[in-house]
Length: 141
Image (tube, rainbow, N blue to C red):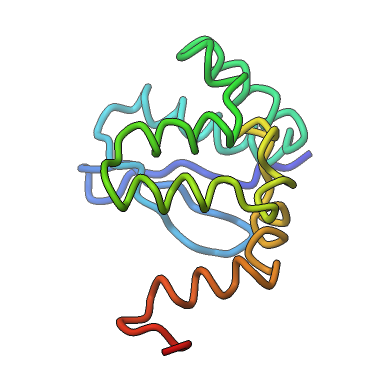
């Protein structure tokens, strides 16, 4: 299998990666040849092993913070509510109880896909909430 990225040095200063597919050049932002070589290997590996990347990312995240692998959206709601006070806290409590969030409430954060969030946003009630949150006046007055 041919490698997608190629390493080269431009003007004897910074190393760059050349993408053979898109024909684009990207700065690796390093002058160290060994570091640049490691980055190129990582880029080529990521292209070759796409399915493995998510598994590796989860492993790294678990080692960085063991709780990260178990945090759910309910935990996010609870933490946001804990940091708010007064009327804002009441609004967050009400919003967090919305049935629109039931689809992601117990979903682990690192397993969340864009489709999950779109499903929440496409719910009629949530769409009204998002629209009204950006309005300066209520559309029902």
